[in-house]
Image (cartoon, rainbow, N blue to C red; front, side):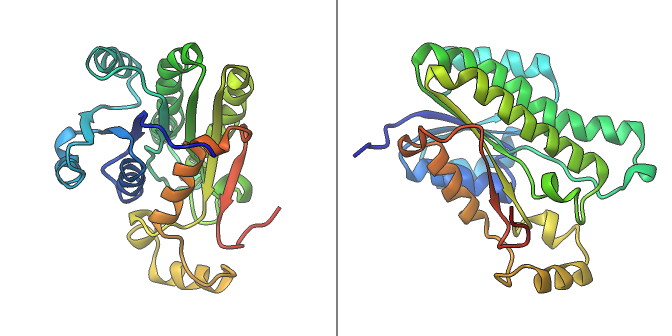
Length: 247
């Protein structure tokens, strides 16, 4: 029986509802977590609640130079990251004609570029150590073209799915797994604030389980994919959508 060993994890977008749930679950599993978001103070309560097992770091994941500088500093202070959860993301509801080039680039830079910048920083150490886990938070929009999300968002998450496959292929022989999760309609501000009541009501009639996903449910799956029992799973995008989309 494999035991979960204490690892150094990094969670991006950790100030949000989903990022906090993931961070708390990893701490509950015994890991130390580097929690990142745009500003470190956004995570003060998370740090306080987790009893010193979380280090908050402010970082703009879309800035490649900032990502490199922060990770070099972390290597000195904390050591190499063994678990990376690429959770940071921004939403755009605009379809193609309404999406400006600036909005397209902004969404891509956070949702896709940021995951690439961080993955390339951690992969070398993971390969050298013969063990590592990368979990990318993708989206149901990958497979549906974005039911309620916009063009840039769906495309960025689709790119993140393909990045998952590419990284998984190149790192599998080194004991590193790379997987994605494609949640559909988690109870975060993306659902509670950026969808109208009419949109939410309609979705609930279409989701077979009859409810939205809870952030803690995603966090438990992240923890499994980040743990010792998932070593034979790599290059997989796991659906979590209550039966809304089946393949």
